[in-house]
Image 1 (tube, each protein chain N blue to C red):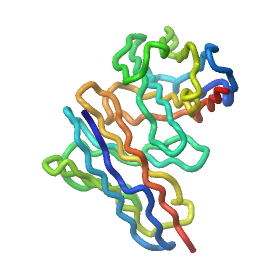
Image 2: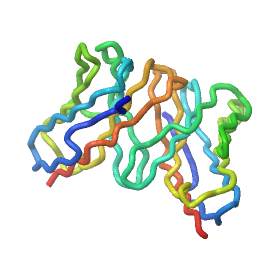
Image 3: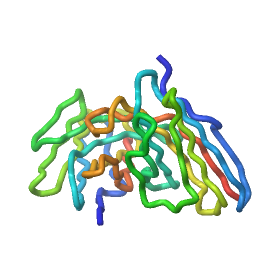
Length: 109
Length: 114
């Protein structure tokens, strides 16, 4: 079977740094993606890691360790607009995305 | 350019009825995937279609079916609706079928089964 684990909620103040961890178990693994979803909105793609290491895109960075079945999303210089749900998703050997349950990030003034 | 569009935006059905949800992908995208998102959960994969052929199926009963048309638009059909089918149904399109092709999600169809 497959499973993904990520924290249910993280709270931080504006300007802070937040790290959202994701651990996964899968019978086949091609890559790890991160999506952001605001309340009532559609998920939007943030990043994708197929190889070990860090990918940086502006204030957001994502990391993958295939040997540890672990990744994280790093949100820097938090802004109020970053309050949203963040999902990690693995692509398995069949080419489909499996999403975690999501992490609610709450940014406070 | 228009993004992924879905219709209808909201739908209320009663148990046992049938529903058809529609999705138009971004122009040039040949892959369409369907997801079910129950409140408070992550999207759950239902189907993926590429070039009008089913390329993947999630763990959903046979009451769920889909198809992709020559213009790459897609329909999701659900028969014999159950209360538990109430959810946000998301359609996502991408150029190809690998995860490194970014999936663009539509706004979803909110289905309520009473």
